[in-house]
Length: 154
Image 1 (cartoon, rainbow, N blue to C red):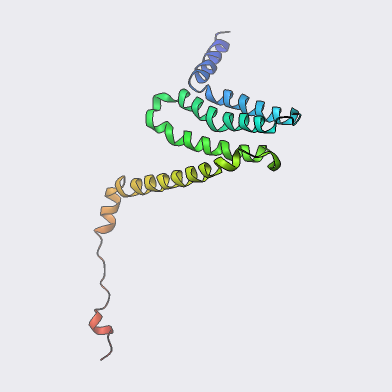
Image 2: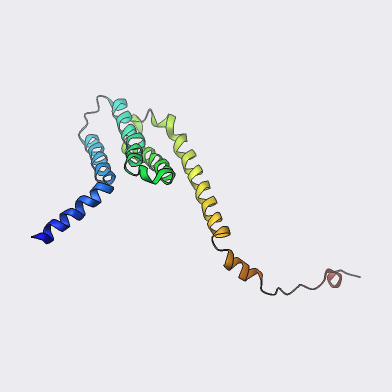
């Protein structure tokens, strides 16, 4: 019986630290279910609600759940907001998309910024995290090409 309680403690410990994932799944499933059962009377209201849930509420909940990581949480939060705009664009039928046209540029901008930050981070890691490997590559003898005087016509 004590083994059962230790497993429960592990589950509660994981949920205590990562409560964002089951809550995000419930919110997304609620939005998809509402899309399935909507009657179509208020498409702008529904579009705004889904856009708010996926592009604003989920990133803020992520920030709240992982606030102890400080600045490391900002990039995933921006990526999650961009993903929320993209998913909303696929959930809402094209004929009911009114707000998405005005916020679509945010998704493109966020993706470009995230890509540039990732490129900078990878270049920084390559250049500064492996100085010994770079020094060993640079210390090998390099054979010189033939002098330019030999290659010029006379």
